[in-house]
Length: 134
Image (cartoon, rainbow, N blue to C red; front, side, top):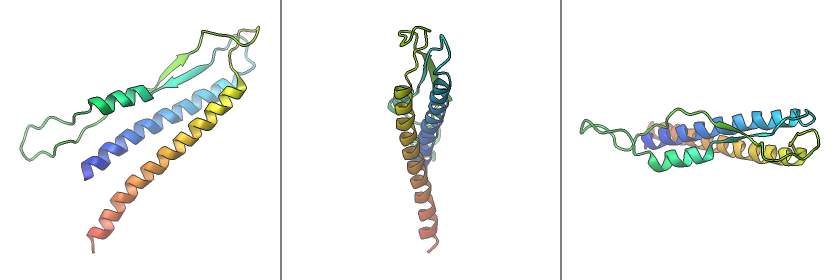
């Protein structure tokens, strides 16, 4: 059971890092809404996490006493992508404040949901310790 909690918390940590970084980039977009020639940026990390989940086979078992299924997520940095495809205004800026505030709200909800899931994982450990001591 402990290996599953460790794997889940590693996944949630990577997802939280991605949502935190996305929040930072969206805030930069909002701050530069009036900057001429500024191009909006976005953060991509969900596809990477999906790929890691599907390819995460766990550690190689070199001893029959090893616990199967424990795996770790590789180190990665969320990828920042600049949108150079369009421009909403004559000054070359393509930041739409309505879109960015909507993205910020959506990202905040996702971040809070991930935090709740992480808290739930640690509550499982706490309950196992409390119940195991009885």
